[in-house]
Length: 418
Figure 1 (spheres, rainbow, N blue to C red):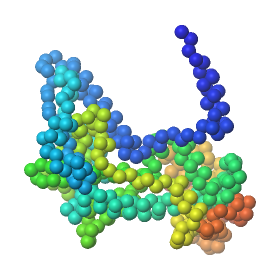
Figure 2 (cartoon, one colour; figure 1 turned 120 degrees about the vertical axis):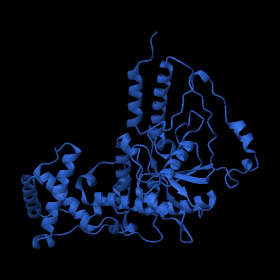
Figure 3 (cartoon, helix red, strand yellow; figure 1 turned 45 degrees about the horizontal axis):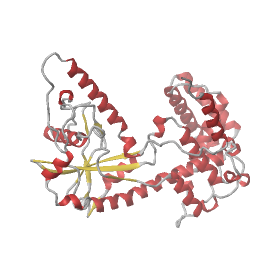
Figure 4 (cartoon, rainbow, N blue to C red; figure 1 turned 180 degrees about the horizontal axis):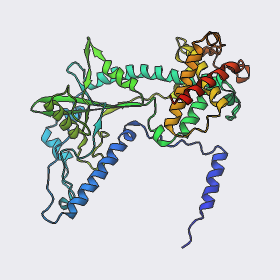
């Protein structure tokens, strides 16, 4: 049987890409589904190992265990239809018997490696889910804007300060404008990053909620998935009448219990998270994807577009990317080229190199000559970001003497082995 020739498909694909007809973007692998992929995969691997060991056992049928219905937030504010439904009826509708009891997988106390470092518990001062989501949405959008403006400032500075970026062919006359070129620079680099990097989108944020109840009471839990710790810090800082809405409720089973947490409290955290992770549905088993939540819908593309339209309050990009920082980055790049250090391999060597350059730069700038070294010009105002590349001032070039002196200081540190 002769199949279709692969070169035909390859040629058609290449033609579509070169002609710009293939404009689709790959999955970003973020959001709740992407964020839970790793623990879900880990749990499946663990389950496979448990099942294999069980089948190899010489005696006795596998142990059976009835899985409790995970108690998810289903109050009137979330699902009115379930508010008046008896718990027994919900259980009958949602708990299905195992398809093959002879192949069921016994549960262990800790069925997988759990690292829930950002686990949180809602305090008694936290409002209902709808009101809480409104408060989170407002605050997270503020944090998003702060983070996004830094990215805009950094990419605008790269276009202003890097001759190679200015001259790079990005396609189309539109990208001859400063802000469009900065936007294209960011998007192209994100699309070209390795999956392990784009998996951690620096601007992504989402959060899921769950509820557990036992003889000790009812506890509302939350788990955020974010690409920047600023989101988590902002959540922990949320208050109502001076009272916190979230407290730490993290758990991990790879290390010892923190000294400040009691043994019974640590065990309760373990049991609570295991209940939320241990849904009966194999498609969601070991994840938090089956829980209700909220995801930040904003994107960096939208922020770039908003800059083009103009903010109500003008943003000073020079606050987020200072002249001093831009000068130091330019000096770092110039010293690297002067000494031919681009061939350094290995993350450890690169970090050591940069640390030595930064130290040498700091030493030079603390001298009388370094104090009067010319600085780059200020970045354009946000209202002027539509300026054409050709109308920008010349690219900042640090004095050759400064680069040579910093290079000498770098060599001295390298010889000293520091």
